[in-house]
Amino acid sequence: MSAGEGGSATPASRVPALVVMHADLAQALVRAAERVVGPFTDVTLLSNEGLSRDDLERGIESHVQSWEHGGLLLTDFWGGSCHICGASAMRRHGEVAIVTGVNLPLLLDYLHNRDRFPVGELAERLQQKGRDSIRVQRGTPA
Amino acid sequence: MSWVLHRIDDRLIHGQVLVAWGQRLDPVRIWVVDDGVASSPWERELFQDAAPGIDVHVTTVADAAAAYASEDEAPGSAFLLVRDLVTARRLAESVNGAREWNVGGLHYAPGKDKLNDYVYLNEADRAAARVLLGLGATLSVQDVPASRAVSLTSLDAGISA
Image (cartoon, rainbow over all chains, first blue to last red; front, side):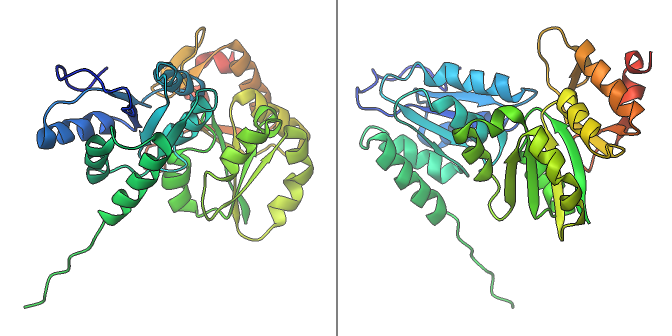
């Protein structure tokens, strides 16, 4: 499944992404991102719902193997099946990196920068952006 | 203390284990007992890094059986994870297997019958379940602590037959 339709041709240097998460989270996150920036392509979605480790790994690999120059796996949390199976699936396929703990600001930063940085650099950048986006604002007691 | 969860789940370490059971039972060690994972350096490393703050041991069934009694006496609580009923049976035959085994995820594969959304069995699974029950084990189907536990035999009459 590709998020959004239309748009122009994919730049050769674009880093594609697979968002693989629990339940409907990937779909919801991408839908939220589309509300902010409009439709986009080159982001695919997968849920781990009801899948064994082997089936999830195969599902991820079927996306990853279509990437000619690597790409990013965006998952919800470190140590979850999406991360573990992603790590297994990506071993055989060029330059692929996993970013865990993905949130909406991180996904938006990916969309904004995926034509500008190679896979490894983009992954490092997103890690920082995701972290920086988590802040606390405390109210002042009356 | 030590063993607080014996879980049968084809995903081994994953979210339900780390977050749902982990927050409830607070393990300091997780034993991933799997001949295949133990024999693969990169898979071993993957699981060893999967649970920050928890000591993950990845071992073969034979090595887990050898360490089983001393782990039972060790300080802090520990999880034991196997991917299927056959592995559970192999371990239970070498140790005192009269334990409660949590059946947490045996997902669909061709030739398996559906018991619920996360448990599918074939004849090899049923045969292993029978041996486990014969050793005094209980098989309790429950994905996360917040859901209701039911016995595997209540979901599949074929096991008792």
